[in-house]
Length: 149
Image 1 (cartoon, rainbow, N blue to C red):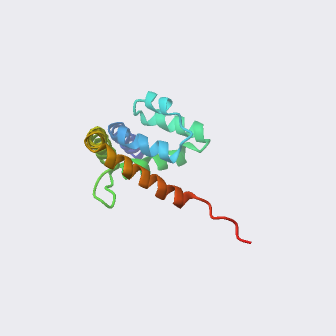
Image 2: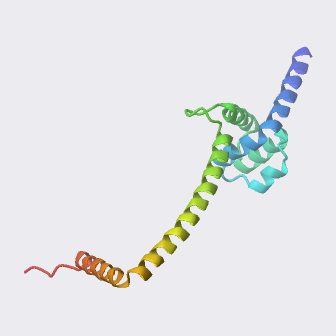
Image 3: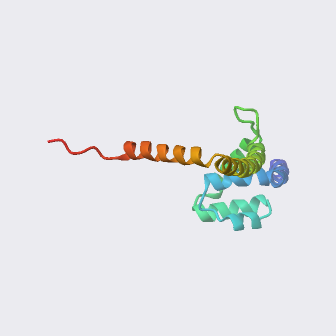
């Protein structure tokens, strides 16, 4: 009886911890079991038993096996990788870098286009000769050599 109460307490703690880690664990669950529907997973709202039932049903694995794997994924979500970052931190960093890179690319593109247009208008003859020269060189490079024989 005492052992049963201890297991219930551990399960309750595990469930609370899983709910707090659900956002981090969701990506790992989708990576481990791609067949699990994302909307159905989110509909569980981090309820351990709900996620357990969903994954076990979708994958046709036993609940005991899925339980062990979910616990492992939860632990993995807390383990920093070789760089010292948690997986969820990598996602945040990646989103910020992508946003900044997109902004820099837009600025560079508009600036480079304006600068090129300005140079062509300032030096139309030089621009025309450079374009003809590049076209000639490109034509030579892409031209097929005549068959030998």
